[in-house]
Length: 198
Length: 198
Image 1 (tube, rainbow over the protein chains, first blue to last red):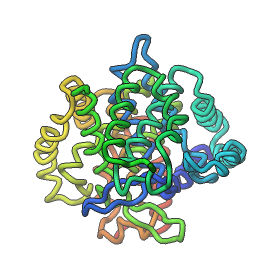
Image 2: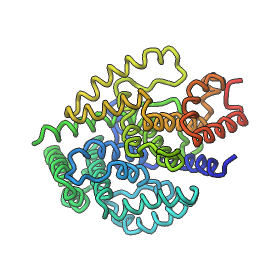
Image 3: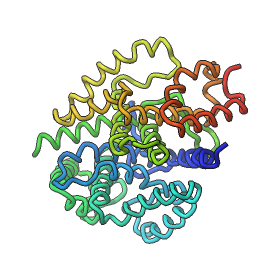
């Protein structure tokens, strides 16, 4: 029996936990209520956003495959570190250190070549410097913002004014005109629905 | 305001429903119980399997980006058609027709170029003929099989003997030696755990 195979099976059993890391954003239940979204669902949804918006990215387009690989891997550290709410300032201050420690645990369970590969994808996403990482970052933030329209409106409920969201959304808007248009449309809807704290 | 942007926002609101399509396979809750996995979580997990196994695919390797795009899109028709349990023979007989009708509804909500793109990915996955579609199929089936080890053992509970699983798993085993090794290991574990109906 292959040690590599055993390590992969153990890692996939560990990765199953991402389906139980709750985010602040909600998803709509079929009965009209809502529940919190989990990070596995979020990762799929961010990948879907990338798939949909890629054709509208300006040339030279980021590599879609590399972007999707980064999106698939970008939240695995949450298995150990948990999700950090985008507007929890105290928690955000410790996020980098907590996620670095989590990465040391999570990626160490993989065969070394795969541990390096997934850790590299996570680090590239976090640094948000390559064209693919910037595209992935913008998809991640747009998805989080979109999810705010579901359920009870988590900006207002969380006491968040519109101005407090700009620091998070402006870098995404600047990635490409398609994000500027999408996010401006979402802000118009959120204002019309009085979804921010006033 | 752009009609394209509006259509994308509406489609993403529709796609949110995939987070509520339940599969038979389970995922482990943090408290030791389990619940059914949903199709959005499944899609992320299949993409993770592809990311992990790609380096072990023989040359010429399938294109990872195209494979991941197919995996992201492959279950969207379930928003209308629901999930079909792999061992529900009566339901399987009508699956193709139900999913075709669902595709006509789901992909029609997108701007035409994106509707064609996502429908093309779904059809390629279903036909399982290209190297990328065969790799995606094998990842999909391996993930479903892996999920059987979580929770209460759904083969035994669903009255499924080992022999009944071979028709589904043999095509995945034949895709590449890495799948043969992985799936053989999983069968060894399932037999040792007496997880099949006897």
